[in-house]
Length: 160
Image (tube, rainbow, N blue to C red; front, side, top):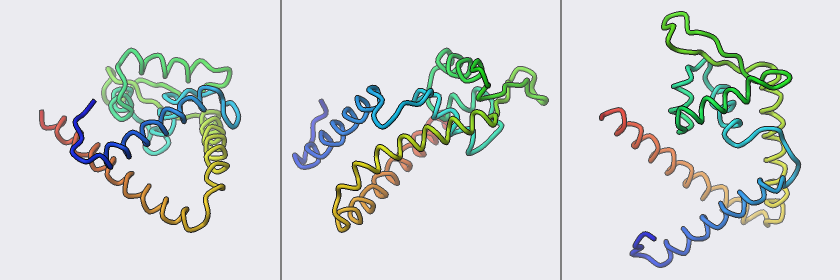
């Protein structure tokens, strides 16, 4: 366990960690409703919908998975009764494969978001309005901090 100088920060970190654990268990138990996507498959579709086409390597880097795992994710998304992604050889570099999301993939992505957001909204609805405002402010600051750390880590990786 890391050595925390501030016991309040340690307690907060523990609470965030426990929240993450509880959320993972709720997802594993199908809280809210089930979807046919794993978290990694959803992240792949989410990444592609923000910027496509992407090569397999670009997706792998953005969602931080190993090459073998990326292959399994894409194979799973591609081998659905209605494929969620389409993979094609890159016209400029035949060693690369470009990946795009199909209409079925977009629908699966929307369904996944709807289920997850619905579950979270049910829980957040129990907060009083003044707590919701504070919670949103704090969440945005935490997300900004995470994004900044990810960007710094990516810049450091690029500098190697």
